[in-house]
Amino acid sequence: MYKTKAYSAASATSPLASATIPRRDPNEHDVQIEILFCGICHSDLHSVRNEWSSLMPTVYPIVPGHEIVGRVTEVGSAVTKYKPGDLAAVGCLVDSDGTCPECQAGLEQLCPNQTLTFNSPDKHLGGVTYGGYSDSVVVDERFVLRLPSNLDLAGAAPLLCAGITTYSPLRRWGVTRGKKVGVVGLGGLGHMGVKFAHALGAHVVAFTTSPGKKEDALRLGADEVVVSRNADEMQKHAGSFDFILDAVSADHDINAYINLLARDGTLTIVGAPEKPLAVSAFSLLMGRRNLAGSIIGGIAETREMLDFCGEHNITADVEVIPIQKVNEAYERLLRSDVKYRFSIDMASLKSE
Ligand SMILES: NC(=O)c1ccc[n+]([C@@H]2O[C@H](COP(=O)([O-])OP(=O)(O)OC[C@H]3O[C@@H](n4cnc5c(N)ncnc54)[C@H](OP(=O)(O)O)[C@@H]3O)[C@@H](O)[C@H]2O)c1
Ligand SMILES: [Zn+2]
Ligand SMILES: [Zn+2]
Image: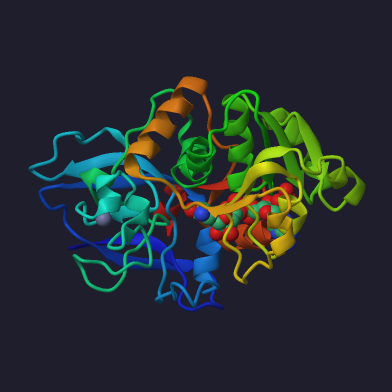
């Protein structure tokens, strides 16, 4: 075991602050990574503030962060795919049983015995796992990913959660050329959804509550932008979508979007608001529509997504911040005031 610097929160109402945490020494299959950048996902904020307490209560202190890119510093004796000096990335998962039907199907994100990057029981050290707001991390090589060499590192970090979480459902529900696709909420996830849906050739409509994001949405790849608070603008699209991806972090009326689906269309939720969303049965009955959910993606699909980003030169639009600004960043995230993902330059942690 060794000690490494991190930022942690002591309770649901405490700010994140400098701390020292333990990490295991690399075992034979482990890769030790010096973290260079870590994205700030809204899930970090939900977890720090214990907003998912009924499903996965937060254990304090918590070190969030699951959009990790860095450089390999040490590898265990059995590691074959990585060596010191390589760039490497880690997303939301650091372990799974590898044997259940989900793992066998390459769907580690659905494994009942998975270990999340933070706030999951830590099989090695006891307590819970600590995430990427930290100097270094030690991860089994099965859950370490290789980055395409052409991608900017700060912008690549958010691919590890926001990227795969939007890429996976767009692929799963067959988004291609000729399909009309909506993306709701232009945050970290939503802006990646727009980029991917555009790259897959769909006709993309971005829905935002922030009129100030209209120009950006077009630049990101949307063909049309709808300010969702305008009922007339919404009505123009009634019954017309093949697929809608809902990436909203807070309470909102999903029936307004279900009503925009064409016959047999699907609305897939990736946003994870604290409170349940009310669904009108009639929104679904009329038009035989589908309501679905999706959570991150498996390791093989994450590799596929990273390759896709390498080929299409896709990264997140990031605002790079030092770790000392993380609490301010959380407040701005709550106001939908980020274009479009914060990426923490972890070099800033060295001065703590
Ligand atoms: N399923 C998964 O695997 C998975 C993975 C990662 C994250 N998540 C969840 O996905 C959600 C989004 O994460 P994120 O990191 O993209 O968050 P984010 O950057 O904060 O983006 C959320 C966006 O939702 C919109 N929004 C916020 N409050 C709203 C409200 N009251 N009504 C309507 N729209 C609102 C805003 O977009 P506009 O300004 O455009 O309206 C905002 O930018 C979070 O709940 C997060 O926990 C799920
Ligand atoms: Zn996330
Ligand atoms: Zn499994």
